[in-house]
Amino acid sequence: MANTLVGWLLDFLSQSRPMVIALLCVALAIVLFRPRVKPEGPGGEGPHASSSCSPHARAAGHRPAVVVSTEGILLHFREGKPRVIPEAIRPLHALAAAADVYLITQLPEDSDTLEQETVDAFREAEFFCEGRCDVRKALFCLTEDGRAAMTRQILPTTHIDNSVKVLQYIAPHVAGAVCVSPDRPIIPCAKGSILSVATLSEYMQLS
Image 1 (cartoon, rainbow, N blue to C red):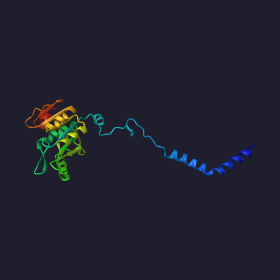
Image 2 (tube, rainbow, N blue to C red):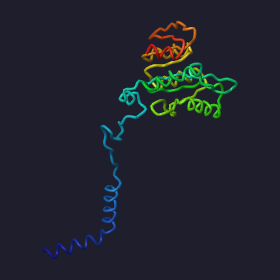
Image 3 (cartoon, helix red, strand yellow):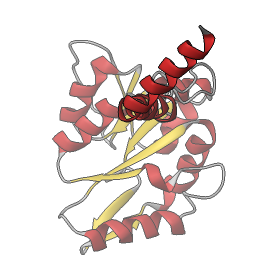
């Protein structure tokens, strides 16, 4: 009986060898190429891991995010060249020591050369030294609408600007909106409030 069973089994395998081999290949492929799920949780890289640029990640660092619109506050464009305002250098250093600062510069024209010259001017003023600003957070645009939209994307704690239009748009969405202008204008705002100061230095003295 046993010999008969073994003989039948060998006969079956010899006749079904192509099918058996195919089934073994399919099983092997499933084992080798099945999708692997990355672990989630703190420090994990799963689909719910937080981006380091998110507002929640910034909050974890206990440094408020501050956007500074640079033209007219930190620099001027004179004869087509960026010139850092000397009186604004030390206040910016102090601000960067306490906050995660984004510098948004509205260029007078679309120019890679002008963008690089602006970065170089900031670097010469030591804005990008250790413990100050991150050069990767020096951003550029060509319009007021552009810098307003960039600020909405960043979601800062405070936005510092000299444009009434931009500040009125941003004020309802941030905890602090600051107008830096020599005449200290009173800016009406349907929601939120806008602080007016003459210089960045005056703002830092109030902070």
